[in-house]
Length: 84
View 1: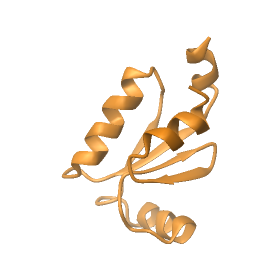
View 2: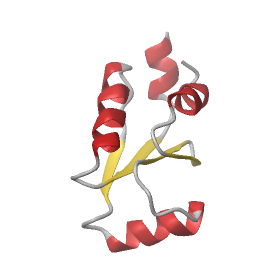
View 3: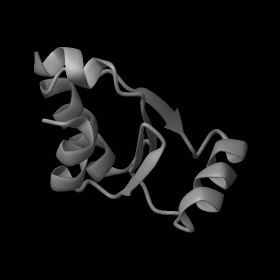
View 4: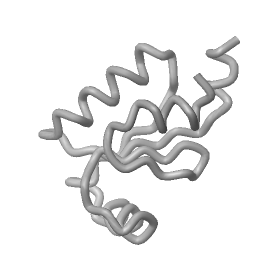
């Protein structure tokens, strides 16, 4: 049932290749069975600009769960937005 709920959520994660918190966040979502789209902002300048425009933050990871931003690897907020 949780997988059905979380799979209905649209999750986008903004990352960089050298970000250890990004790696942890990706691992966490995979363990929870959450599908997500990963965008490497070190290679996609437009996405980086969109990310900063939406949150005012340059730091990664940033997760957008159903268009609600989570800046950093905040498990409690992620779980709340995913309903897990």
